[in-house]
Image 1 (cartoon, rainbow, N blue to C red):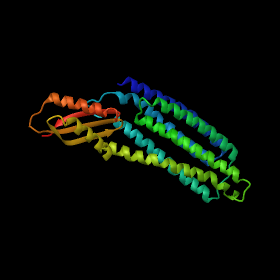
Image 2 (spheres, rainbow, N blue to C red):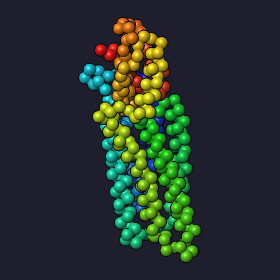
Image 3 (cartoon, rainbow, N blue to C red):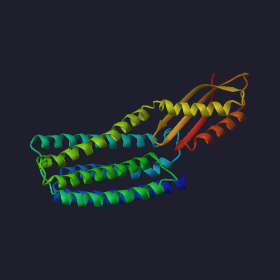
Length: 297
């Protein structure tokens, strides 16, 4: 187990979990008192995020255990599975928020106290920014898939609270104008816009984790990057690249490099040296990496 990485990830997730708990409790209470559809939508999203963060937090220690014959991929695929479940549920929540607010708009909308919502969302935005900056600072030394997921969700909260603040500031300015007839539609419209903003990441992550679970090769850009490193590292030896087999699941990457000998002679010592060079050149670009050199027969 890499103690430094584990301690960093554990510390970041604990802090994010604490912040999410505080954030969610405040949002649930505020949603009850303010009666804002936007605040309710934000609160529901964060509540589900909190519930889904707990099993991820429990899984972390197992992700640092070595692979075995019984578990050739360790717990990496469980990580991908949990990430997939997390984003499927969040996507379902977002779609439900959009449909419910469309119904509110079709029924004439509703009005909330813009000053109260503005004061609340502005305070929340400051809290989100502060938490994100602390987490971002801590993640400079190490950033796993889970950490990146949490950082993204805090960025989402910053953008959504900022957007909501601007929208209700606009409502205050419209109160004594000829455009005040649109005020009942502002809250649900903002809730829909926030929900649409939240849709992209779940869709992207669902597609990515599905590929990982069925062990598809990574994107072309990743494959090309690995291939360039491999070709560079074997060019001084009597071998040529025949085939590249790359598997990514969770935070782990397995690379099998199939090589052909130009002289029909294989030297195990050279294989070991090539393996070490490739691992060293790629270890900073991937979280946990395993490289094997295989003769193409």
